[in-house]
Length: 474
Ligand code: HEM
Ligand code: HEM
Image (cartoon, rainbow, N blue to C red):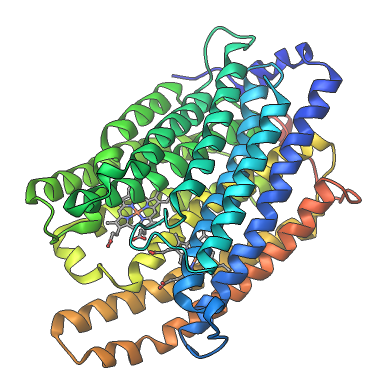
């Protein structure tokens, strides 16, 4: 079944005034610039962390210790870069696909302030040593997490009210994913704060629930929502199957919330809960394969064009990493393989294949595809190509090095060799991770330059992100 095309929906755009378009562009620009600053900061910290594996005494002053910097890296790339980048793009996608203006630009600005206040105070708190310890991805003290929750509530209110003003009768698929992501995440963030869930074994279950739902019910639906808008938009053709998108949406909702227990296999959590998590991890193959097939089939026949269109190349890598990373996750969740990979650097490879290869590439692809349409300014062609190749090669080195190293590390532990041997064996893999990290970080500097050209600076010479329609291309 062919769904309605993005182009049809955008035909309703004339209902918005020039002033509305300028206000939307200003919001999109501000979120993108803010996300870029957090990307530079968060990954500079990530790079420093990567080198601390080889030189643990380097910059070991108390504010720069590994224990303080690691959660600063993860939280700033999660809530500073990826979240703010996705939310800015979501505003644009929702308003455009609904053919209306943003319900409230004031609320959008307020949301941006709240996200930034949370990320900034969270970073300061972590560096001062105020850390909620073992609660991964929610190490910020709870009052700061309340500010994050406020940012989410303000934003979802604004998005829902925008959708309510839509020009068309139906709600485009992207908005299902975006609103779904927001509503689920508000619940998840609330559960993660309620004190009676933060004790004993229950806390462990909630930890798994929060950890994987942060990636599965926040970043994943938002990034998929962007794919459903940006891929057809760039290709100038409708999505392959609307029905497949709906199926992937609901199966994602059925399987994702229950799979967090796979982080705690062989733990004192009830065995049935662990088994349920494994079954749901396998069930995730349905939305992952369905969603990826939908995107790849939408691109069918246009693969020759993907290198000429760098926005599409970013989106294509995002889809591939979603497919490969999630399938890897399913395999990783099986007990026999968790026995080898749990606690090893293999998991860190998986995190970067998904959060970097899937989510970050989706954010970049959507920004390169949509920001020039909002601001009327293209980046430079060389700049976008340099960002793409540095990020892709850097990430590949990072993920391959840790996947091999992490497997050897796990096998060493299974064989029961002296622990220090597994540490020594990792040295070259950590070095390669550092090399990959340098390329990734350089790519982010180039991205910042490209953002500058798409917003405040002199526009560049990259072609329009929208490809010629098929007939014209032939
Ligand atoms: C220059 C780029 C980057 C470098 C060098 C880098 C480096 C690192 C390092 C060294 C760690 C600690 C690993 C450990 O404890 O063994 C880490 C963890 C992590 N990073 Fe990055 N990172 C980068 C970019 C990113 C980005 C852009 C994201 C997300 C959008 C991200 C998400 C994460 C996550 C989720 C973890 C925790 C992994 C786990 O516990 O499995 N990183 N990173
Ligand atoms: C849908 C299929 C997926 C499954 C079944 C899956 C499964 C897993 C498993 C088994 C682990 C290792 C747990 C451990 O050893 O402690 C893991 C870790 C992780 N996954 Fe996935 N994954 C999937 C998709 C994703 C996606 C799409 C993302 C990002 C958007 C992601 C991000 C992460 C992160 C950040 C970690 C590290 C968590 C930590 O800090 O321990 N995963 N995943």
